[in-house]
Image 1: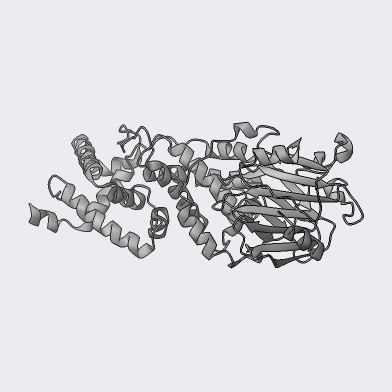
Image 2 (image 1 turned 90 degrees about the vertical axis):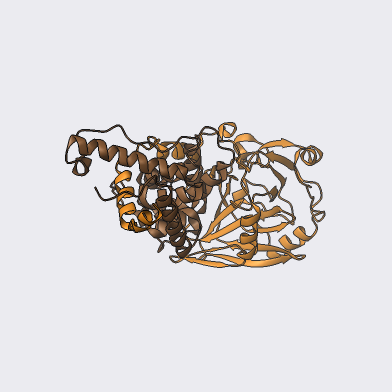
Length: 189
Length: 272
């Protein structure tokens, strides 16, 4: 989240009264997580950008009904994910999750003690990614929110549009299926 | 193999997922702030460029809205109420200054022309063009001017009445005596939104022959429309005076003018 010169509650209050600049600042602060949430919720649909944008527009309209003492991000993600899911059925091109091209300067070298280790790590990640792709959409969605986007439990539940308890049990079952989807149980390296 | 899998601790999978998160190539995040900002600041007359309408499942939200229609939401000292209305939300709070549309009948010379109500036409033309049954207030007779607006998106029909003995001139209506509007709405986004300073304006629920309504009087309040996609239609923002609003059959009706509550109700009940 980018730093904003104004406190979020102040921006929300101004945006509630139609201040577009204040809302733009809110969008800027949350656009990355919102876009990625929309991307996951739409199943990698090629209109994730439209979905995220639509979510923000709906959030602006709904701001008068937002409780200022509630956390803003889960509320926003609920709206964005809902907008994205509505597009899922008609989504055109789909894009699957992919690994970044390895970056020698990245700090993830901590996971790669040696060139051989780096290769193994990449293989291990690809294997996990392949297993994720084999999961049902609902399983992949909950795992992606919680671990790949690193949403909190409450935010994961919000993005799914379900109570926290439901999200937790859904996540637990999804992890079980992910383990089962792995070609072999993977020992600690 | 099964036994080996069962022995795999959750935390190993979780650790591997956390590691995977550091290595993923998400699509680059677009500049949504700029895109949303430009949609919320439509330039005058670019309604045609407004993003296309999207189809949303409305039945669930409609049911929720109905259930919550009479709910009172206390929002950090600001109160937003629905008064049983699906198409209009009213918020209590300070009324921002500088309304987008200010009456200027003098500039155009035509009754109601400065109110941003759309293009002038006849009652019959409005009835033919509207997607809903346009009603006429029997108590007032034929309007002196009729407009068809393209906001909100299903269209608004507006009747403007010139000042007369029973309809005092209203400065907020650019010198007109009364404004009657009707729109078919989109409940999930809320068709219309008002902000009234309830320390100086009175907001009270009313019944219009069984239809839910609200009477707002006293200090002028702020009004604007929301598009079905949730966008505020900024150019519809307007400071308005005493208003009776009610809903029937998915249509929101509003009567604005310098008239009493009982007069407004009498006019409302004569809509045929």
